[in-house]
Length: 201
Ligand SMILES: Cc1cc2nc3c(=O)[nH]c(=O)nc-3n(C[C@H](O)[C@H](O)[C@H](O)COP(=O)(O)O)c2cc1C
Image (cartoon, rainbow, N blue to C red; front, top):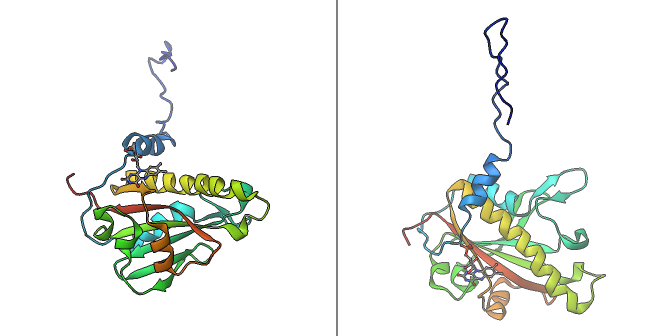
């Protein structure tokens, strides 16, 4: 912290320009990050969905295809599924589009807790083990879990700033959800994450 230097010749204090800390928003997000399990059923706007998915695992470097979350060996093996009332979609980062996977409302299949069926959005993080070719078989789950965790934290921070409630979830009937989403054998569900407007808990 600088001290005030009075210029005795002019009786004037030249103030430095006000600093709007570039880290303030991040610190605010970290301060309010938390898990919430009470959601209103209100749908999220497509603008919110867009920002949320980009924050989760979108492309932030066009030249290299780099993403907003790190991944082991830069495998980028996590596919983000958005399970909405109107259907289940796979997020395609390269085009920033949602591709329809199933037309059914699969929200209830994304977890074993009641709120998942009524919250407006459940993200499902699916690791494609086929992309993790250099990893030993016993390392794949571990690294995929870590990569999904980085994405989940991006979503937590976005939600903290956007006034949304969220909780990352491991309590999933993976066999049931994989069948509902029609996943391939090499695709493994790591985590899910519910997002919505907060209801009083
Ligand atoms: C890998 C992982 C799995 C989790 N699974 C669940 C879950 O299935 N259901 C749930 O309600 N919360 C789940 N949570 C959220 C934790 O319970 C929560 O982060 C913890 O209680 C701390 O609370 P906080 O996030 O508000 O700090 C999980 C968190 C992590 C990191």
